[in-house]
Image (cartoon, helix red, strand yellow):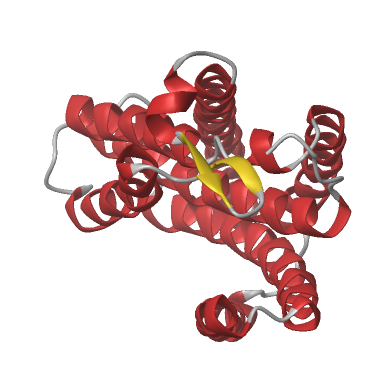
Length: 258
């Protein structure tokens, strides 16, 4: 009997350790699923953008029009639709992820990637293919390092999230203003702030995803985990694409063929 308290303590500690190990294994599996969804979506987005820019579909999205500067490609109706379509898919997923079926959520995710790819077609007209590829790999390295930091850091990034969201709204407003102002200095500042904000959001969202899993302990194979993994991958994919676009504005070499 003298050893009973120690035995109970040992058993409790062992069970706690086993629970933590199971939770950690589940988290790693869940994060792997999230990154796999994100990577697959990124590949589809890139393939759609490149396919449209290098085939006859380009004329449907960006027809050639004679202007004062000569024959140029300008956005057509399909291009404008593709620019706003991704936002519609994001809103549907954001507000309906818990109500929609797993198949519907996955289908909307793929549709979003196709629409986003169509909206990114213009980068192959504006920038050289070499600079697009170079900036993509720079973005991938930056994103990977930042997401790893968000996953491993013990610092609480919760407060940073509110600050970053305010900064995001700020650059959206500034970008709308710059449509009319057409200031290269303002655009440069927006690009710098955009890079900093989406680097921060990548770390923040990675930690949030990790924290949400620990809070709700999503079981492997459940519909909730399946749908949440798609939604979480969407958040990271949006961070990657926006980070890529702002870096491309800063570091991309413009093409003379657009």
